[in-house]
Image (cartoon, rainbow, N blue to C red; front, side, top):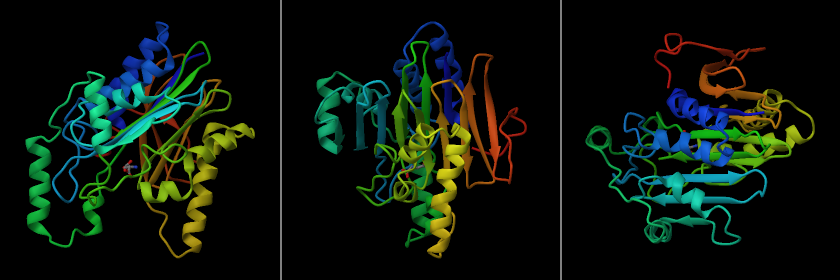
Length: 306
Ligand code: ASP
């Protein structure tokens, strides 16, 4: 049994390639890393890796993580500026019994020691977007936070192992030093090959409040399907936020079970994602409607969405 799921349209090419890799016997971890790296390398995807979204100070700082579902080991980097592929550093850190989650300078020194390529991750486009926003506004209003997205990939291989990989530049115009859910185990991702894997994208400050990825896997352990687990975990947090007088916010979730079923949930009107199962790799979409169904869609239907 093999299967894969990735967040947003941007993951489609990498997910398709990674699904072929799984078919050829490549382990889940390597396949997930490949899919995430494909997004990191493409500057057209403005919220991940090369050409990512700058913070308020004009610096592009990146977060990434990797988790192995058989050992429950994880690795992660946060607030790194010059590592060309943060997911590769996270992957190499996974397996260390201690010191597996590194921030800033320490993470970059680790990448150098490992011989991972360094790169200035800013592009003319990302700096233009930053300069325009700075010139328009001095108070950095919340709408500057729009347009962020994380690539999250969950994979299952024929041996029954599962893996999760995540990577993001975080919120556009974020405060220097800000870290979201993406490199944080239990919030941005969780993976236990016995019960399933989950990952989150959206406003990290909200995702962390519900430890949503752990909550989803925990629900799958109790027998919920990936789709039910995503929806129920999301509903519970949204309900609490509404009770507290807050809006539902911007959160989208994906999950994969050890038997290759996938699911998603979102507070957005539509949330596209890519997934592969025994038949093919395709783009899917979930709409935020009562009883919404998850079905394959073409690019045309997804025009104008991320
Ligand atoms: N969750 C990411 C963060 O808060 C951003 C996103 O997925 O849109 O850093």
